[in-house]
Image (cartoon, rainbow, N blue to C red; front, top):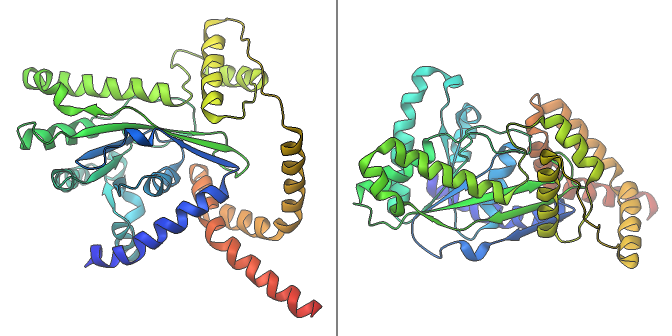
Length: 340
C-alpha cells in the first residue's frame, strides 16, 4: 500500500525536484552518467556532507530510482515514516539511536538485499554520518556487508556493481555556490570473491579501501594527517576560479596537495567573459530586489525550524523550491490588486 501510494507522488516529485535543482544552484553539473549500468543490481555509494540534500539530489539526477538507507531518527513520526518510505527511503539505525535498535538493521539489510536481487538500486552513505568538512572519513562496513551478502546469496552470479559518487559543493548552505556531481567507475563485487572466500574481513577491507580511493578522486579531500583549518585557510587565500566545474575540482585538488606538501601552487584563473560577467551581475542585483521578501521568509523559516546546522542546506533547499513559487504568486496578485 505504501509503495503504491508512494508511486503517486514519487515520480511527479522527482521531476519537480530535478527541474528545481538546476534553478536552485548557481550552477549544477553532473558528469560520468555513462558509468551507470542501464540495468542490473547496483549500489550508489555516496560521500556525505550535506544531510538529506545529498539523497534528494541523487534521487533525481539518475534515471535509476534508488532506495536510500537513511538515518532512522527522521522516521520517528508515523506520517513522516510512511511518506519517506513512499520516497524509497529505508531507516538505518546507529548506536546513538539505542544499542538494541542496531538489531533492526538486519531486517533493513535483508530488504536491501531483496531490492538488489531483483535488479534494483540501493543508495548508501558509507561514511555513516554527514559532515561539512571537505574530507573522506573512514567508511563503515555496512555497504560491504550488504554487497557481499547479496552476491553470496546468488553464488556471486548477480553481477552486482558499486558506483562511487562524489558530490562537491562550493557552498553547503547557499544557492550562490556551484555543485558538481561525479559518477565514478563501476566496481564489480564479484572481483573480490576470492579474497572474501578466504577471509571475509579482508574482503570487506579491500572493497571499502577501493571505494574510499575512488571517493578521493571525485571530491576535494584534506588528508587526515594535515591541519584541516590551516589547510582550508590557505586554500581560500590561493584558490583560482575556473569556469568548468571539472577543471575547478582538479585545480582545487592540486592546490590542496601543494599546501599539504609545502609546495608552490601555480595555476591561472580563467578569464572572465565580459558579457557573461555583466549579465551575471545584472541578474544578481535584480534578484536581490525581486527575491528579497522570499529570501527573508525562507531564512527565518530555516533558522526557526532547524536546530542542527548540518541541516541548514537541506531545509533551505526544501523551503526554497516549494515556497518561492507560492510567494511569488502571492506577490504577483498583490501587485496586480494594488496597481490595477
